[in-house]
Length: 272
Length: 313
Image (tube, rainbow over all chains, first blue to last red; front, side, top):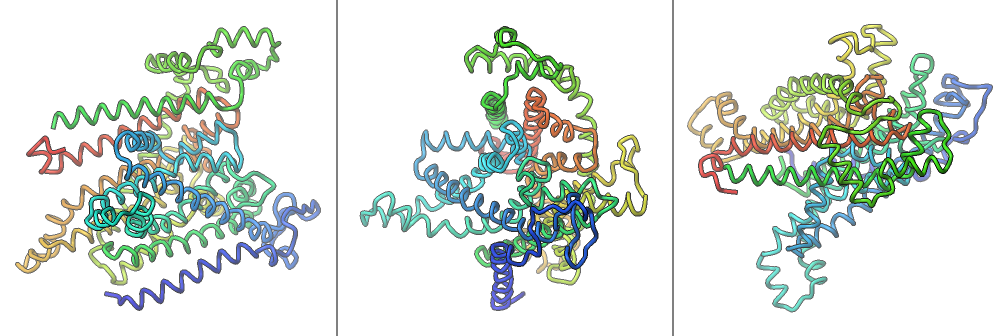
């Protein structure tokens, strides 16, 4: 059995790495050796060199710079979407849990219908119908993803709703909003945070997967998924086109997955 | 028990209707005029008068709910519409593509079960031993690796460099190995972790301690008691994996140019072939709903509290 102290130390290390990754993504352009959009038709599909540390793509753009700029897009979209959906889902879930009756039923049936589609397929279909692009991808993933937090928040609200401290709060004269913010939220927040932390990696993979399929972020904006999608054609002649962007996704997702596991270990000690 | 199933079945039917409504609404609000698309697929540029006449004939001027009703009736009759890009009924296209995707998914499922059960059980039994750390690290790699990258790497290693495989679906089992592996590996990572967690949770219960105290062999405890008891949770998670698996087929088929529903759907999206897209979404959600329903039913039957008392739910 590992001690709590050991766990905390490793958690702080992984958390620091994750924060550094985010900071790095924000300031990445400083390190970019070249303009990520500048094409150089004399030097296409070149192997890594001093000027182009990770080589060039089919129109002579610097892969290293594109990966660095892509970090902003990939990480930025992931966090933007997750935070947005987290807030939206939790609010809907609390409303459903507190309201009961018809409101609860409508929300739950709506989420049943969303859940009756395999998530990624539904997202692909929505983007496919609305047309490829970043905004439509965000819409599609929002439609698919909110139920996750809403359902969890609802169940958690139900579990605390009839507790004695809630009765105490009501007797003390707390209004609805105060009940939610002072009595409900503090008691349900940690499982929600665990779920959020566990979802970061998955969201990043989903987003880059959609871009890989040509549905998400469009060229020429650099994004790791669409870089891979372009590199596919040069599998035999220029493998560096797909090795490095994929490696970038893999490393970042692995960092956040590890972080998610650790957050769960700390906030949900019952989990083995 | 009977009451439970009829209730559940009613719920399933309602959800399927809801899913069909949502799918139709999505195509309804999507940009693009079906009448115009039909002409364009035949390389004809129609005049506005012809377009208007066609719209009237296709029922596109009817109110939304009437259009949905007609579409639903046709759907129930097995008429899924006309695919612009394939210039034929959608049903015929699906008939041709579905077996390919099912083949891919089944082989991937086989890999999933064959690898994740032994790995998950072993990892749980040897908790915090070296073998557990190795399995956990491999699973972490599995869940963190993007499937599309993995597929490309496998293609590069085994097809371009070693020439071990050729990637054509005519190749029988050899042709399906790489795509199925790409589909299965991220899921194996996920499922191994879930099996490990489910077994560890069961291992921490009181009856296991009691059995150990009575000197019952560890292997007997695990295979006769712990495994059967944790099976319910494991099967539920399995149903969730199938959703991920179905979604993964789109990416994997795209990488390996596998001639199933995944490549079909990407093709339909590029060419705005909405009837094909609609049929695909309906079909997938139908399969997914049926799998969830079956799994839930199996769990109910496995649970003696429900089986014996019947009307517990």
